[in-house]
Length: 300
Image (cartoon, rainbow, N blue to C red; front, side, top):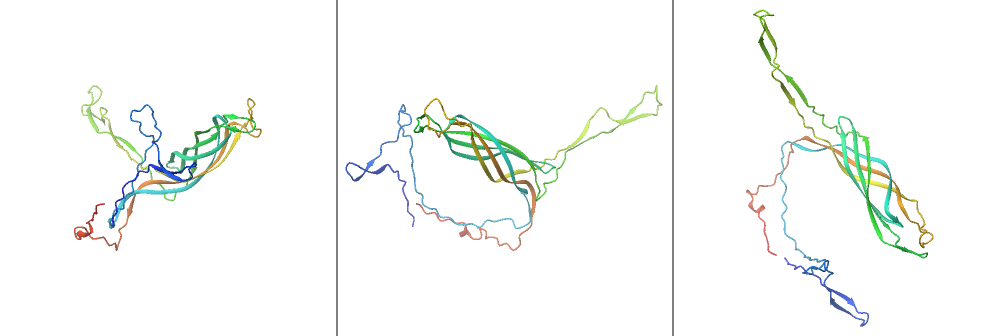
């Protein structure tokens, strides 16, 4: 049984009147206008939702090549976990009372295998979003302020030797060769016999044979990143120009130490021969069984 469900817009809310002691429904007023100078006074936020019914589908068995083929796919050369240490000093734009939260994202900008060696060069940064509180007003009983944020990029780079699970393809080198043709020229009779001739290469031309080979460059794929972090606030001071709780301090510098564990794969696109698959039962063709391609559509 198919049921069509219309989209509903919710525009009322149930509240409790503290004076009357019973609940009743009231209509909500339009949302706050973003631009009061607008002619149309459109609401700042508007949401429309709709519940959709399920559609029928017919599973189809994929058909593939059963004979042997040659494919070009990424081949795993190595998989490794790299561990390195980072020390950084971060200066905040204004004095902070405390750090509320630090979110971290690891970004890789370079992951290069230097062929024909096994040295992998890695470069990137850790994106840190720091939420901290400030002291806007205070007395000896307490302090109030705002929550600010600061986003910084902490760079890093390192190199490491890797052990190949599958060695990369041998580099095909470029070549350039010159060639010339024989030229037979007459000699002046004043200094040579009449039967003498000059046999040499032709200096009036330049011939060259050049070969360029375009090798597949190995590339990296990130698997997992783990960051162990220790942050310490530097030069915490008690402000002397205003009243402040005795145990509170302000600071602008954060010294952090990070141990980063990065797991990645080194791959290279290679041509791989896939053998034939025996005993594979192929699904019937649609022209042989027309009913397998028919789809019944029911209007909702």
